[in-house]
Amino acid sequence: MLWFKLKSLNKAFLVTTFFLVGVGIASATPEYDRDTFGGWSDSNNDCLNTRHEFLAELSTGPVQFSANGCRVVRGRWLDPYTDQIFTESSDLDVDHLVPLYWAWQRGAWAWSDAKKQEFGNDPRNLFAVDNGTNRSKSAKGPLEWLPPNQSFHCQYVSRFYRIVLIYDLDISPDEASALKQQREQICGE
Image 1 (cartoon, helix red, strand yellow):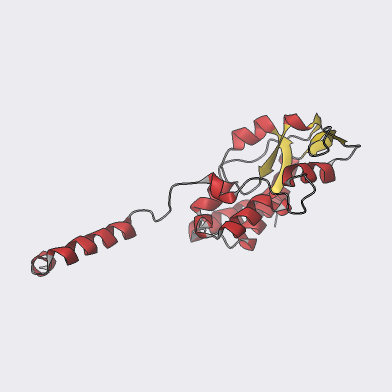
Image 2 (cartoon, rainbow, N blue to C red):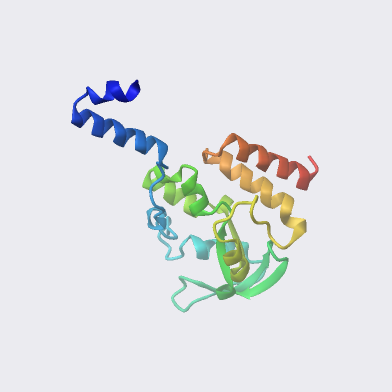
């Protein structure tokens, strides 16, 4: 019956209708483009970008800078993911707790460039961690990956969920329920 009614409509209308229906059925999320988040910013123009300012602030020991003063070379950092101490900044990644790709899949793709830049440089969403561990995490959320350091799990999932709420990321009711349940199990809430 529906097909009979559609046949009587003009061709342009049919093509447009099927295109729009197809868009609604297919994912509306554009292909991931990390570049839209910008890189590490230098918002105060002191030549230290977010990564190096973060490392300098986080170091629990004296910090050594590059000759031009724009990069942190050495310091003392406790990686919360592994509970190991690091002294060479080259051994560390500054991890986005809520990965950029994960956020992209949950609505960050639609943010303004300024909001993406803010998210990518927000210290509440950053940890200095062992580069190998960070790469094993990749773009996974806490339902797929948790740090090897079990004593950090509660803080990890709680902070992850807080960032999701702060940035109003679009998570499904099932995912929200699973994250809440995970936090309750890990943190004993």
